[in-house]
Length: 309
Image 1 (cartoon, rainbow, N blue to C red):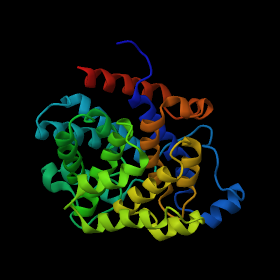
Image 2 (cartoon, helix red, strand yellow):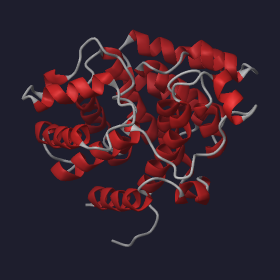
Image 3 (cartoon, rainbow, N blue to C red):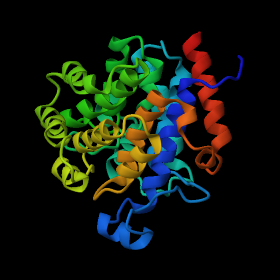
């Protein structure tokens, strides 16, 4: 196919570079981050810009989609995604502070437990929500499949209803951005699409609405949460997107300079912003320093070809 820029390329670079900006400060408080990087906090990805397990699992999930075919039966699709997750689990590059629940879930799948039962039922961590941006692109025009595959992709590691709701929401927000939905409509559409899955998730999104007008963004972020759990990570990412809907860089800086799971928040927000604004909104020098940049572009073209087919 003609190698022109595709929306999925901006989505993948958007999330990967958000991840690279948040990864160095993932376990630092906002105060410590500012002491280390200056009063405005971290502003640029390092060079080279290494991403975390968030992007690694995003790429693994996307490769699994391609292995099975986007229209494959859900069991075939999840077997392929699960096999890619096993490759990630066993990779020497899996040394980027991977989440415990993701590790345990993939280990259970590797041991022969069905993908439907492999996930940890008590965990509502953000590990299943951080990796599903590609689903919003692949199933942009098929909401039934988007929901089904997003839920299934959570179950293999995270079976808590709140984690499932966050995963569906993270994929759906990418779809809304690709649809050019007005950002003001993101929350009502999201409520409608995720209704009935988790009251905890609904309450987290409500907190975004509570604080959007606050002038002190630090207090607003703290009111929403820290992002270690799925509902908070998606809510914090959504807050950053709604505060800076037309500025990728400002959104990533806001998402990374938080008091919690900075890389996951920025990763989720980065996928949404990449879908909304396109590749030209992401600084060229950021992209040039991104780990495995050529592989990310190649994956994007293959996903675009699969979707067009």
